[in-house]
Length: 340
Image (cartoon, rainbow, N blue to C red; front, side):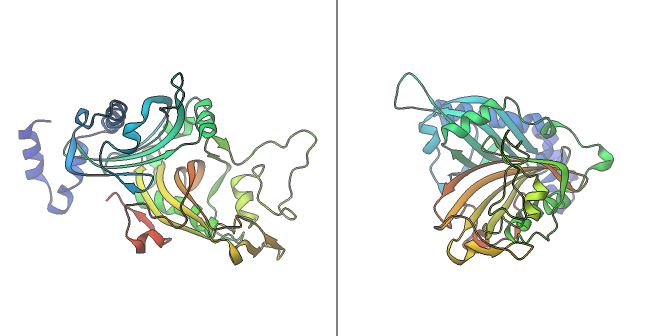
């Protein structure tokens, strides 16, 4: 876009609208996705000069503030074939889940890994880089084996059925609230065919193996991957996830009905492992020591209900902050749209 056109657009802006809307309109879906490829190419080459960076660019990897050129920049060898984008054109942000490979001890092979990435693009430069690298070979191989992302993640919602940004976030946040307060009686907005994938593994609707009996939520001591999304939540057996915090919604694609979040799941152990199911049955479940999952999770939302969920997760130090939040926000279970 020429400088003259930029100036004309800026002059035509209404004051409160100008700072975000016109600037982001210069970079559409394809443009934002291209920024991901350009960034990853720079990381592979370990050459920050290959991509335009703001002078005050901020970079974290696995919630740690690092200098550009450190961390994955030192070890990434190539990008993989699994590529799932969430383009937030209005906010000028793009989120991404993909397979990558890193250096290995053996010179003849590379090590598979997974990445969840967020880039904020301003004035044709990358202003923020947030990446979460899951160094789990089995998980990376499972995601690669999926081939392509679920077709739902690339399908547009009919224009007449599209939800607002706020409504998409509100619906997605009900997943976190329903799990944290899991008493089996919450507001669980799932479609009948809702499915969840975690680190490339199906976490819901897994067929019962031949010769086995499908677990009964009325008697099971833990939730089962053989149950659907709604059945898992209504069981009340997710109660041991006692705190879901730093709920940062970092990219919203209203056209496709997709919401991308970074979040932490805390299992505080001790007394939090003891709870009652909706029927009043006493259960002890969950990790015996304090445990935190760092998670990148995205939701496909249709007509006010969650239909498809995909997540990358890895254990982090208990109680860790994202590196993008104050302590108060990092410990809070309040939903935050951090893009606007």
